[in-house]
Each structure stands twice: as structure tokens, then as C-alpha cells.
Image (tube, rainbow, N blue to C red; front, side, top):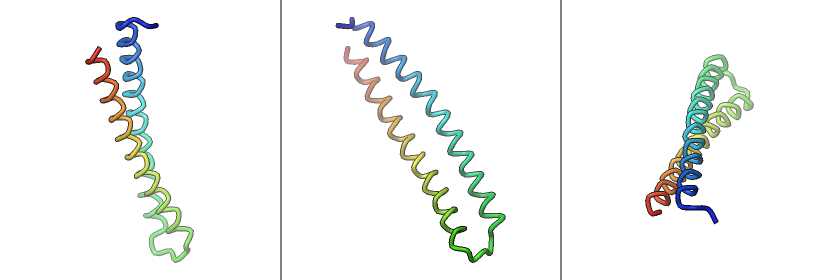
Length: 86
């Protein structure tokens, strides 16, 4: 069985990796928002259903990343709570 210090160190490492993932998620969200804006600009006025679908799918992807970021933050907070109770 791991010692308390080993568990704390493991939690710290996990939260460090989790924090790094938040940066990557933020970058992905930003890139998707830029892609969606570009697509909207170049397809403005189009009556093709695919255009609306593509825009909606990009919007959903951005929303999903937002949800993932919230879950990651909650996981980090829970892990920090575990470490504090040790």
C-alpha cells in the first residue's frame, strides 16, 4: 500500500497533468470557435442544409469542450479535497 506522501504526490501529478489538459482544451475550443466564425463568414447567405449542419456541429463541439472543461475542473477539485484529508 502506498504511503500518504506517495498518494499526495500521485494526486499532485494527476492534477498537474489535468491542468495541462485544460490548456489544451482551451486551445482546441479557441481554434474551433475561429473555424466556426470563418465557416460562417464564407457561407453567409448559403441555402445549403450542409452549411447549417456544419455550423451547428462546430457549435456543439465548442459546447462539448466547455462541458469537458467543467468536468476536469470538478475532478481536480475532488482530487485536491482527497489530498487535504490525508
